[in-house]
Image 1: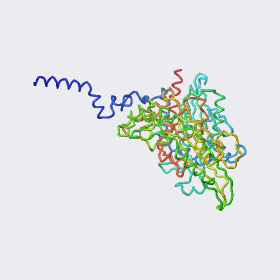
Image 2: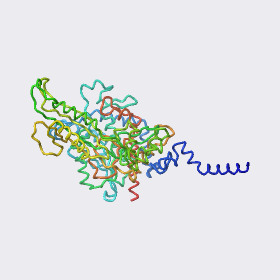
Image 3: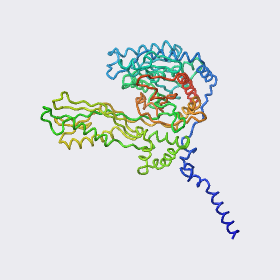
Image 4: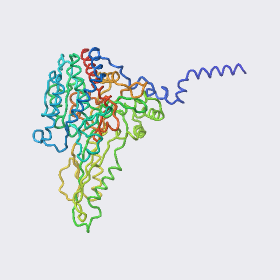
Length: 558
């Protein structure tokens, strides 16, 4: 009997040894055998580039030594402070350049750049797009037909500061005050800090004796904060005419996240796409009259019903592999310290990837605070109607701002709105006029029109040489926020729009990234007390200069 038990125990231990990892995985909830490629520490998902060190070590060391010197840091802080003092505000109602004198402030920006960076201006070719769009081209030794240029974007304009809000600022918005830790002022982060850092990187490379093989282009718009039509589009048209379709190697522009901590892990979040955009106007018209004899539902009542119905049937949140946020979560479950939330996410990624019924919605529901990344959002921003309390309103107007999910389209969103509003119009016996319908002369009517529309941006690849160079540069020049960790480079989604919307035809490699830790909602950009942390800002030129050097090394391999 004892021999038989011995044989049984031996067999059991052999089985346990054979399936040890599977059994542990069942209890640990995070092993390869439980979650396959999404297991913690998996090498199959979100691979990280090795840090990229430029071959031109002499120039890189020159730049690094400079940005780490206290004398240089005081100098670049003063440069940013100086350009903040130029209130280059852009307004929604600006007239054409050359006719509206409020554009003239941008002549001061150009003069400041020329005065502050004489070595850069004597090295590059300066072109203008619609007067105030600045294009600085540092020609490489190899022709752009053979080696595509790198393009770095920034914008000169800032969001206006309301006169009545100036008193709410800790320091005046256009003083560029430096308190020893922070540089305060409108544009400190968005986007003059970025622009100065790019200019500094080129200036340092020139001073260090660098001679590029790949052409380097800096382009600065003047109206990114409004439409971009006055400078952003003309710059893109200028460059398209010069370099042609897909004629640019890599485009860099400001990002919305930078270096952040999520899931207790340090990430460098590179936005590889932007949500789409749609501003729609809803008009409800009806017969007027004296308020003593009202209809059962006047135009305001109908509009109220429309708003309630739009919110009741809001666009659903779901997370699909087309969304860069799916890639971010893949990076999180593989690289971030394990947690119950990450285990829940990990358990759903596979089904969401294969589009199993309900899985994409269930995955999105786990991350309530991030819902706006996973769906088309809508915000009823303005409602106007009625002119007198004893008069029945004849016209009520609502304006709705929508940010389109990457899986959606302008056409999809318009169809959704037309379907909902057409039903309400029929319910009240009113005519309906859709976005593209012919004009209806009916007095009682619900109509839709488009103010501005933009499709979601194409998703830039992460499996490309350009992204690998960017990732390797990030991992070489930037540090994790949590000591002892790796800095993980991950794709991300930009919920707002930048001037890159005009440059889609020039390259598929468009990346939006600000190489600092953005806090308090983009360092309080667009609101009172905008700032940038000086210790991070002074190192930005090292990142951009190293990126240029690494991209130039790739040119040498062609």
